[in-house]
Amino acid sequence: MHTPIRFRDSLGCLLLAAVAVSTSHSAALGEPVAPVEFRHARVTDAWEAYANVLTFGQGQTLALVDDGCKLSMPEWTAKMGDRPKVRVAYDAVDGDDDPKHEGRGYHGSTIGIPSSLNYQGKRGVAYNDQVAVIRALECCHCKVQDSRTVAVALQWILDHHQEYHITAVNLAPVDDLEHAQPVPTEIDEKLKLLRARNIWVSAPTGNHGFTRGISWPSCQPDCFAIGAVRPGKDEVTQDRSDKVDLLVPAAATSSSNAIACGAVLLLREAIEKTGYDWKADGKTLPDAMLAIMQRTGVPVTDAAPQRRHRRLDLKAALDDVFARAKK
Image (cartoon, rainbow, N blue to C red; front, side, top):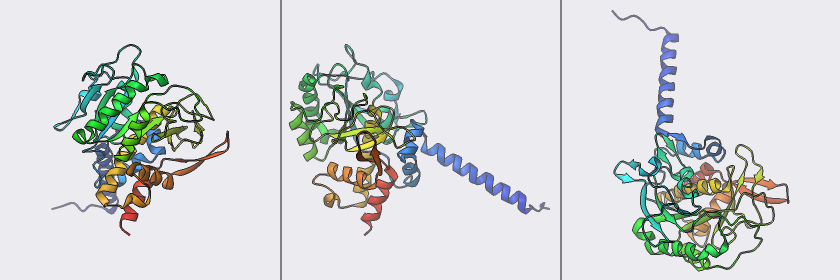
């Protein structure tokens, strides 16, 4: 004989089951490597909304162009099933496939974490992507004269992007100067060619609080300049100018740019999956993706000087593509 289950007990079981499902779903999504920043940019909302729709970077490779990397770190030796997180490595300074830090290098070991981490349950924005680790100079805090080896790195991407399916480039160096105008260098033609081949390239603006100029190479044509707002608050911070293309929540613009690079991998996947005709938004796919993120981004006014920008809202950008593709 079965004992009747009272309504209160039944409701309690349902609530416990709902909590279990929610907890399981959260575990499946993983823990954001930057919780405040990801919530602010609605990365975690995008994960939840598109959990059964997008692969979050699978099949795409993000090129990390910086001052080298300690590839023995467990974050980079990890595998995702049968796929290694690091798909390929190259040293444009020495011309070999060992991008280890040399001299003052240190930064490139961690620059891919906000965009690409998939390790012990912690995740970056596009956690199922792969990365191409490319050493382009001795130290991320560089001089414009380092453009020669940076150009070699960008040429390597031009030569190999189809082979490794490189769809975006995190061009991480900063020269820490306040450039109000571009500085002609060897990288400019490479950037132009990468844009024409529909490969996203963006760089951090710098972290000195400049209000009238930004670092090289973010100041260059055909390189998107990614600035920052304070995590959890739409207050413009760090280096900015009229050239800034998008703001992303982060304490430093190296992180804001890394988050933006992960976001464009998700946006590209959404465009490809829906068949959205992006040509009305821009001359190239990178131009179109920026236009979508600006259109759907949160307006932010920089108080000093008075200047209007847009702050990344990843879920809104994805929603926009899926909604427009249905029309």
